[in-house]
Length: 419
Length: 140
Image (tube, rainbow over all chains, first blue to last red; front, side, top):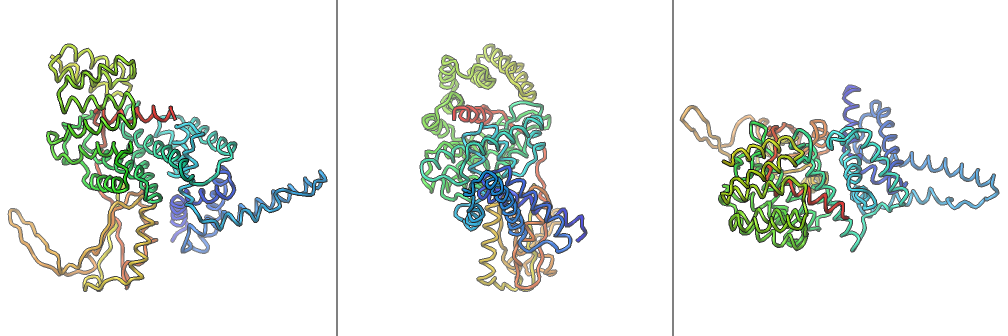
């Protein structure tokens, strides 16, 4: 191997091992920023040694050992300094005397998975949802601040600052790098799933900007979901989320026409749906049900996506089942957005009047007032009810509210069709 | 990106010699690692080509022939489908595979074609999931 090839191999190994490495180190030194630095140090050591010795048989273990040696050296140095300071202050008793032992004990502690605890720490509720997403992509996905910024259409400085602040918040809150148990675990798991789904959706249905979709983010979220499923094989909601993402991603290739405009679900060429993703999604969903998760919000949403995936032709879609699933979802996860989706299902299952009734209820409540898809949906129901002049007004209203260029064009075309 | 990792056939695999318990165990552990890393999408081993068929096309004609087929080294004994960031990552994971055969053997990595024109259909149902989620997150 040439030096260049070795360097590339090292960087790839590092990328694969990074999250686990940082997770283990963070548990040991209780500081994510320091853990990242130590991991980086290990990479530097590898870059200087491996070209001479060759890539070791178990490169992950090698990097971990190198980083841990660094951590202990650093700790000893600090301890010595602390002792000197203490001597000067005539305070001989050092509370930190057993620090190295503590680190050595932490090294032997393999209970709980490093990666899992890192995921749980990055998704801690003390952080804002945006900070959780950025930190997760950075620590677990290994994305650079620049890549995250590009994905979220933000500036690199903003993302970098968000990550730094998140690490500080975690350090200040003195969080334990562990996977919580019992009730807390349930609450925290929900935060983890939300963050992964937020990342997925940011890629799947971009809220602003010129493109409708940023698939890299969705793929990253799917990978995160699969990692989580591998680490937590008994949590139905994890498999529910995984199923949901696989099923939705199966439609990627069919969602945009040659003109770059979105193709609605009933007009999509279903031959372009990814059968492998559908099969994987349905398998994950089955697993979620087998674990007793039928009423979890992610499982219910995956059930909904599965109804579409199972229909080989749009007219085969079981809209009554979908309407029934939305009835249950709105109980588990009440929100005006779910209500709006329910209205769509009711329109398809029982006719536009059923949907209009629900939509008018949402309008009366005042929720979703600036939400483009509320008038868009109502426009569609009115269109189906042949109330074309009213539909036209709603599509125009929706186009004015939309922040996505492609979506705007799509809605204006629909308005123009109301003749 | 998706890659297919192809396990090339050997004299042994073509002769139907089954892997040892140790190898099955090592492969099981390796597969578990692939799953936990979130990269494995599918994978299976294939029966020897003696049980296979080939269908040759020439204009309208279709000729079916039975295995076994010659050129053992060009045959496939198994495969994985992985979702990786780049080819370098695929290579790194492939290097971690235990030797899949009893004797010398070879893996081949090939990139899978994918629809690069990813897009979006804008049913309210999908785009709104994000909104709902954001809502939920800000409440949390």
